[in-house]
Image (cartoon, rainbow, N blue to C red):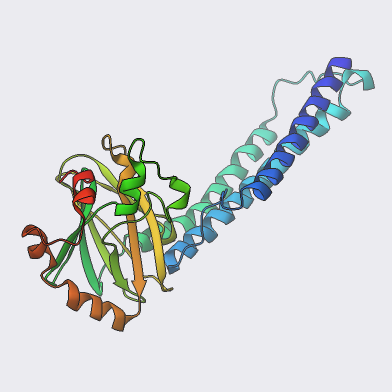
Length: 291
């Protein structure tokens, strides 16, 4: 009896301690997100809603299962005179606990399948961008436009990351999450992304767009998004790709259509200028990017 009480008391203390630590962490580190972001696209919001639906279904199942377990431990312990049942099995119980999970899985699979189909439907895009991963930078080529450029780690981060640089990384805005040349797209446009790699495996990830696609040499992965809000959205490579894996961030700028057209006019022919060593990237940024 004493051992059973100790086990229950220990479980209760650990539960309250874990809850207190979560609350403290939320107060002490406001930018520490425990949940996925809702994002700025229709599909990112739909993915978030689907995630929360499944989450609360799992919470409900957990409450029921652990509630029955705790109730049984407390109310059917030996000190209350409980005796173990002497039957071998119950066909009715086995049918019920098999049928209920099957129904729950089917109900969850229907909306999940609908969202997955939408995620793969990249037909009729307004624009297409080929993204190629390199060690350790990204290359963006806008199809049907004379626009192509490399995106390297921003110079401020390049300087701060050096050994004994004397620069406090916390003083650098968006340290290791900023680039010299972001990918720019117009708000409201359906953007198809064709993602590949030139050397090793990479992975293009932007949480606010709900996109994470592997960049694989010799293979083109396809996805799309339609940003509904103007802003700057950041991500990074999420596939370990070498010693500078942590220094190839992703930055997507979503702008108004007029601003996008103005940017497009200034970028036309930029790749040829890059090839002629007229890139806006500094020598330090170019060297750190492995050029």
